[in-house]
Length: 169
Image (tube, rainbow, N blue to C red):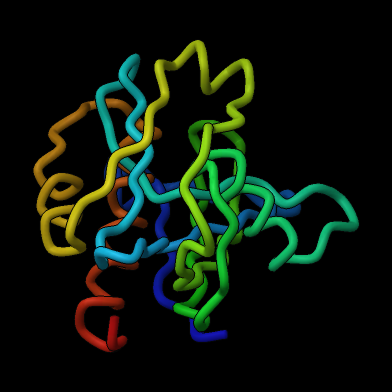
């Protein structure tokens, strides 16, 4: 899979440092519906939007994890259309690294209820659908000073720009 970016504290805060432990593996989808809008999770507690996705469980295949995450966070089944690429982020300040795999997917069937984790519920998570260019604008305009949100924003901008520029949708 194509490597899209490596994002480190140097990019986010200007600080040096790299976390060297094994990275957490995660998957995300640029998930299109029948109206060609994409799904964004909104976290009210932190006031930011991000692409649908999350961690891969030990022994779980990437595409199985993606379909599980889409069902949980978007309330629907999906068909994976193609790979977008990978992003490696390294949060030295928090002792965490992640290797994320991004895919384009389409909703299959009807949209249903979300199946959120306790943490997602406590964060006031909801799902919104936007045209991809509007989603990129919303994410780009987030001015949160939160360390994690800055990483998420940087990742999502790279991915959405890649899809708009290099993938028919």
